[in-house]
Length: 108
Image (cartoon, rainbow, N blue to C red; front, side, top):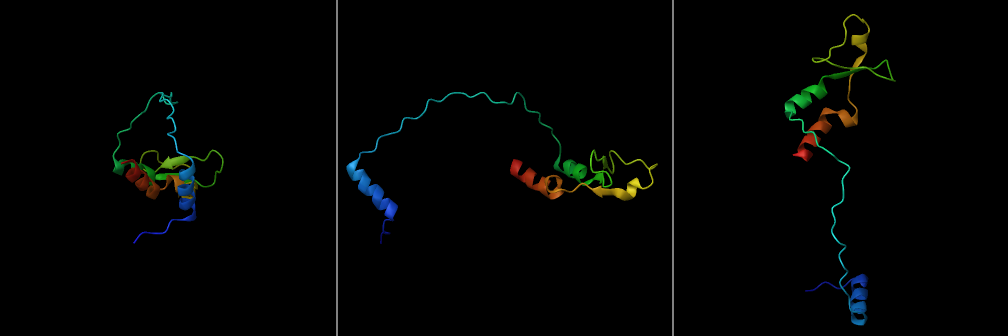
């Protein structure tokens, strides 16, 4: 059993009776210059990227020019007493650990 033609398909069928279609010429292929001069590939393990992302902390008291620390790599100074209490994980949507996992999967 065949399906009935839609209105659009019937119109196209009727037009083909009146006008013979012709091939559209393909545009010439040419090499377009890209804006990229080089690519830098950082060979870093997934676990290391996740560790770096998960250890980031930001000083919540400062909105402009916020200081970013890392628990292991760039620890906050212990001489500034209230600083350690103000630190919060750096977790916006673009920098979250969950989005990194999705990016790794998409890249691979």
